[in-house]
Picture 1 (tube, rainbow, N blue to C red):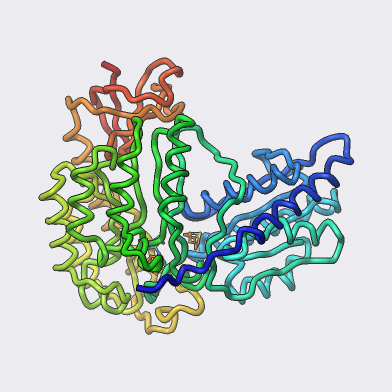
Picture 2: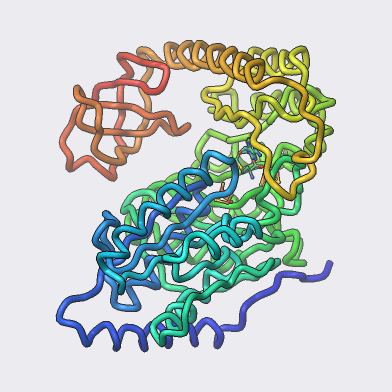
Length: 470
Ligand code: SAH
Ligand code: SF4
Ligand code: F3S
């Protein structure tokens, strides 16, 4: 096996940190530290990227704020997965023009997946002149260099050329939580599902070195983090590019061996690469949470093939069976698309029957959204919007009933939960998570946040469980 992971040389990352110091010195000339607001759309990968961007901004001498309106710098980390996500970004970016008129020194930046779509970049160039800096996810590590260019007043900066991407280690990070943490283990996607923009926006699959990942986890545990999620578009491909025989189940085993009381989660798993060995390792590793997000997308084999998912309905169901044989109480969640081009209503009904057969704990349901540049966007799409919506509603209704029934079965059980924050529920002040990740509302001392407690489940709704400390 040959190693193919492209890695950014350490001195190039060090150079970026020098730029941070240069900017910091300029910022220090003002009486007050400038403020920065980072607004994040999309998936956990973007959340994790925003923590790096905030880390770099702190190093540049910015104070991070949680409201954009008056910030000296606004950075919008965008998502391109569906039309709706993009419309929101365009709306919000458009509205920033007024603030910029009041404060012409304000710096407005846009990064993330939308910055890798040529038609979006063109629109930003032409019609959103108040945006100063646009850069894609593959060059995120060069953010300080782009900022330096802005500081030296060389006009607008666009760094949006298509890029396969590389691994940059040693960037500063500023995490948002104290209990839960994201750890990216790999970037990019090679799967090219025909509906999906991610392989075009995030570049090729590449894995971080296991030693670096493990030492990051060790440090998080030492700092008191209790719930660590390993991130990748398809974590089951982890290690293929390292050329060492390393794979995801092995990484999980090694992470599980780290001492301390904490939980390991991961997302996302592509079903075609979810193996018996993964299920065996999950079952045997006590720190690996008994849950898995296993997107099926469609219950119909013809549609799955048109989506380029590379598994059949039967193969998917076999994996679920194997998983449940190893971990009977596993919490299973999934993603599904309704209205893929050419999907007929009888084909959609295979999706309905699949969810009845599997009985997911929760489901993320999406109506297909054409993405420019993907093969599916060129496919015939005869089904009307109304029919798609009707199918979508049937699916949501069925899943809501299943989720409710699944939650009902928790009544009277005792769950070893991690209290992870304050609740917005009017009757309960705390939020907790079952080992499988289901949300539990309960009452208790805020001092319990960050601790594992035993909770007796007393009530439920479609979305959450309710319980009492015991
Ligand atoms: N890498 C993950 C998915 C990331 S995108 C995986 O393969 O599991 C999250 C979800 O968005 C996908 O699982 C899919 O259900 C949905 N999605 C992606 N592209 C979409 C599109 N064009 N229209 C509607 N939903 C889409
Ligand atoms: Fe998109 Fe498929 Fe890659 Fe997931 S595996 S990110 S759905 S192309
Ligand atoms: Fe969106 Fe990019 Fe994530 S398109 S879902 S932010 S990988």
